[in-house]
Amino acid sequence: MFTATLHRSRRLALGLLATVACAAPLLASAQSYPTKPVKVVVGYSAGGAVDAVARAVGQALSASLGQSFVIDNKPGAGTNIAVKYVIGAEPDGYTLMMAANALAANMALYQPAPFDAERDLVPVSLIGRVPVVIAANANAPYANIAQLIAAAKAKPGSISFASPGNGSTPHMAIEFFKRAAGISLLHIPYRGGSQALTDVIGGQLPLAAMNALEVQPHVKSGKLKVLAVLSPNRTVIFPDAPTIAESGYPGFEASVWYGLVAPVATPKPIVAKLHAEVQKALQTKEVRERMTAVGGEVIPGSADMFGALIHSERQRYEKLVREANIKPD
Image 1 (cartoon, rainbow, N blue to C red):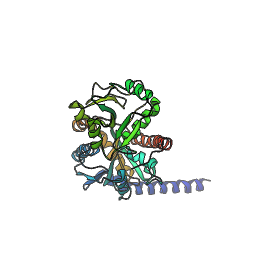
Image 2 (cartoon, one colour):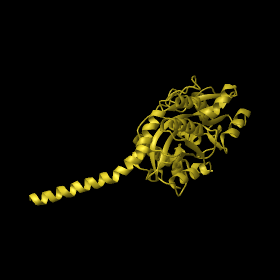
Image 3 (tube, rainbow, N blue to C red):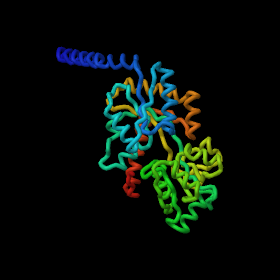
């Protein structure tokens, strides 16, 4: 028995040594990481909110890790081009993606699904969120959500709203809102927010659902008014605009969230190091100011928390797409 126990102990010790031997190169690699520039892919054009946040976080990571974090804009196909590129990249920590809601929504919108983010990618860190807002022409006959709902119930389907496109985060947000409020609104999809807002300002449509940053200059100029912010907290850029909860619908929210992801086989020590550095970056003045400038807020938290968000958002979008029969552009 003693001999058998000794053999088992020996096998266990050898197994532990093998595990340590295998882990050692990964730990050493993480300690020296990064040794060359890191690519951060963004599925949108330069100049937008996601791009701005990616650049702010990238600059903070460059400062703390001593290597450039280079933004690589790959717009198209509702961010699917960018996602597929990152999934197919070498899983060595040198290709990352600044993702947004489309990462979860596109798995519901496109059939068959173009990818499985929960299988093909690993969450590094949630960065923050920017609220979707319901904005109206300055001369629209409703000053708040209660008046909008009353008008919509009086003439179901007679009030139209613009969005940046079918399946966009603002479109989905209004679909959620319609269900929460029990009203019918007519959706008019555009290819981007610029023309949609031009038409709302011109009076062709009374309403638009957009992210806060896109609406801000037109609210400042007095051409639009914000009826509600679809996030748990008020936004700094519209401090007087009530949240949707304050407007009578607690528990309902719709924000554009941002987070960093990597190819699924990226070594865990490198993912852990990136997560720790991102958490530090979120505390810097520069990143916080950039998030405030786009109307949002930073959200520190674990990688698991971000993974849970992607999962819950995917389920939420799948249910909505099925019920509302939403099709992508």
